[in-house]
Length: 163
Image (cartoon, rainbow, N blue to C red; front, side, top):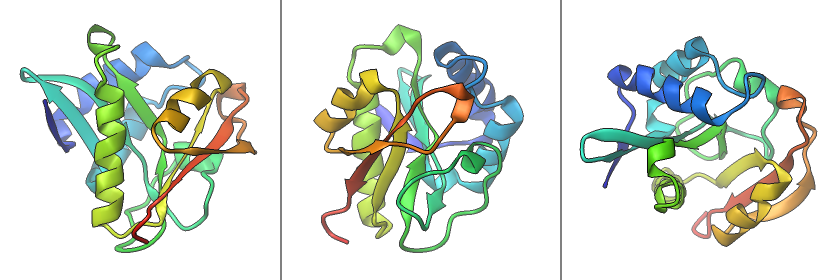
């Protein structure tokens, strides 16, 4: 398995996997994914297995502890230091599910947060994913103010132990 930064030519596969895993209301548009690839390639990681895109994790760096819904619409280039990586999508191709790829991507993003001297990683998730993220070292910090896709979300935070 190779974990690498996103490339422009990954767009079609990223969009396919995003739409495969999220409802229409929750999935990022092709235009939003194209913008993320252009503006935040340093925090957009791809898992590649046997030359195929198996999954990805991505999100901008923000100053605040919790992500806000505007991050799903517009992305600015990442600041050089500090802040939290705000995961706006973690998605694995259906053919590669239940193989630990999501966990490997989360681990790689943690390593990246440490290397970039970020405060940590923040994300929101549905209630049925709380245990998954807790297993990966995140703390459930309660209900999120997010109304993205009309769903209920929970704030999950991993703090960089070296920050």
